[in-house]
Length: 242
Image 1 (cartoon, one colour):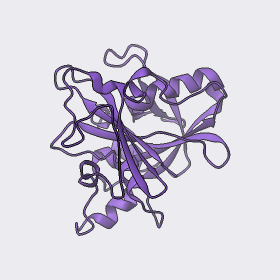
Image 2 (cartoon, one colour):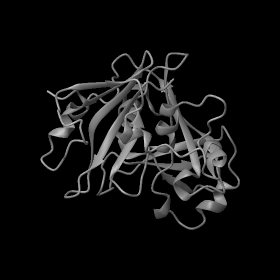
Image 3 (cartoon, helix red, strand yellow):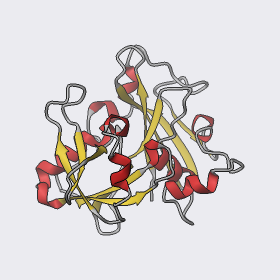
Image 4 (cartoon, one colour):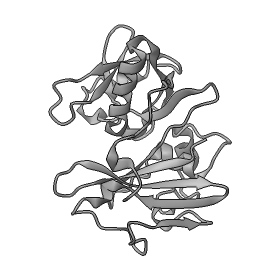
């Protein structure tokens, strides 16, 4: 179950993404706190939550996040839940963790903070990113993919935008690129590759959505051992604001 989400903000000056807050759902209560990433001089706190040092709580989802849920009255709502692979297990956090809470009107996204799954392993679902940069044959390749097909990670070491970038490619011939892992996860995925070894980090097709918007077409799952030396998102910018 998803209990924590990291809120990342895109700096309008540098166009880089920075984690600025964390939202948690525990004991039927929502909690919100800023992280050290909010110290960026260009960042502006949200509405009445303007004390960077305070931990806020509410019995209801905070408005800034509630507004990122798709209205149940929308005609595409059932299709939307299907694209997100949400079936009978719905909760607000699950939707936000899959959809990333993206809105066209701002520069914010949400990502789940992974915890150990039932087997004690690291497991996270994510949609393939950067599909618009892939060759047009990408969509045709999707038609041949099935759930649980293995995908491979490809370290894009000469990527000028992100030295940690990890591309996704097919395992079976013909070999084709299928986008990228979200940059938000890339550092941790690279750490797990180093700690566990490349043969023990597995990526699978979770769901293919041929009729969905481009950013929701390929849902992937990464699974690997939760190494004793691994802590997710342990960089300073993710830590509570001090």
